[in-house]
Length: 139
Image 1 (cartoon, rainbow, N blue to C red):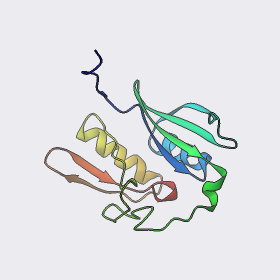
Image 2: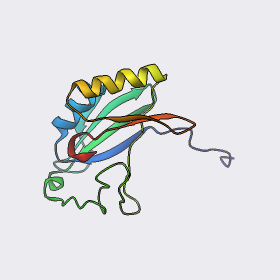
Image 3: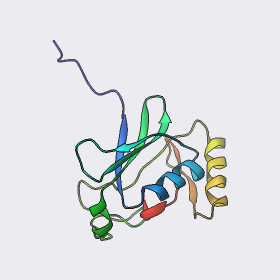
């Protein structure tokens, strides 16, 4: 019993931030997501957890810890710095979001650009088309 149970998707991916307000503004305005929860993180004093809806079953989350403001960003170690940059094992290299069609991808690219954010692409990877950009805190 229970041996055939497996994960069937990603509920949320949590990213550290030193500026929760800026991340929420970017992901809601620029990427069109909806803030679905913002609360003190359970059992961690001074920490906030914010969730932005991707769909009915998954979200992007941000975790603010006051100590994040003092954490040093070291490109090539803690953060790749750009889409092809190196980062230490266990760190996030990039986040890839999905849209329903290539037309939606082009419309999203145009909306991102209209907010003054540089966007590269779309690039054809054979199995998908991708655009690349960086948000607040070089995410």
